[in-house]
Image (cartoon, rainbow over all chains, first blue to last red; front, side, top):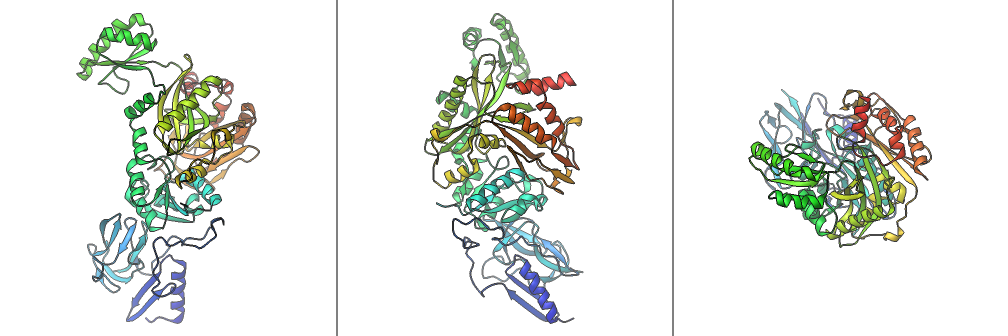
Length: 153
Length: 449
């Protein structure tokens, strides 16, 4: 299977309508890395989500919508078991627990979710191959948000 | 400082209510929702909703660290706790402050001070606010002296007892020695502790409370009183502002006592001081202080014209009290009915489910605070409040008439509600006359049942 221009357009649309900033997709040797906005632009946690005059009423659409990412066909989402900051790797600078293409079992640790300095390890809960990692390292994931998409065995 | 974005750590009608004030204040809202509330009206009204956990409140709305993490990660600078859930949990207020989030409410120390019944009673006494007369007695001689002060009727309670066990009611002081001996012997046998204390018995009491606002530095004003005597198992069903059939002097003393109590604590934000009004003696006693916005705050807003949530934000942002006591005036009467998802025909069993259709009333003097619309889910995890219908009129008669018409125009389909039950209360002669006591619904149930 190869990726057509239409497929890429579809994927771009999916990213556009999601709340994620990056998407890494690898299948059959083809790798697609997408990043929303200016490359490498650091986003401060306290940066205002919208610039507006202090007297203007809040617009209804100032904040990114909640993730509504649906799994690619034939895959299963691994949901975040709790809200917190998602980390791909055990420590900054260390290799990630898993990457696209990794094989996981139910017990494989796939990341860490931090809640107020408390680190919670997250396990895959499913056996198969990772086809995408929609959750961004160091960013907030909500309860139930898709951390990974796994093609089950 | 300026509050730009607030996390609302609540759900239901109060979440929608807080969002409404934020809109007019130009404050962005992030709503922390459980998985059961993702599709709720407040989740859509908020600028953003973040899912903090599953439906069970212990795993979502009550998780202090998760809620604070959600506020930090979404760039909020303040947290509004609403009522219930974490609103009166001192560790939550404390963690917010430690993390640089403005907690829209009192300080953690103030929450602790009013949350502890004994401590709150001591603070009330120190502020010269009356408490239910009573105290522990060592022997019959001491009991007779104290009983003389308290007056009859009074209760003898076992120090080691609880839940009404070991209580004796004394209607005439002449009966005290015999009752004391019996109570003491019974207490010793039942609880291994023969000590007893005496307390004034209030046969007919009303629940009257005073809304206060404090700047956190000892300046406190009141926004009048509310009567919430129509209760079922301590759950308020109908509230009104001002309390009807109340002597002017007594009303002024209530207001003064409430502000004195809050001022003594240097209370910050909106709070409510609750009193038991002794109808026969025409006296009042401090019950407790609620350190948060109340469910029934809209009746006060209707009558005073102030947005209490907006004042909460102003105080939290450090702007202090923007109004003086002289600027507070009271216009007419407002009455609120709580509409609950419960079945009055089956002992008021909660009735969760899907609201297939919701038609709420409109009209002159009618306000509805709700999160329920067509297709709304009422999850089984939370309280059964569907909304509040508030009627404001120039007189109590006009407010009552508007409220009755509003209830008649309300249609909630798909689940059972207490609307018919509320209508029957509005038609009750005693309620129409005003000033019923907290035993009103129980006595009415006994009559009808």
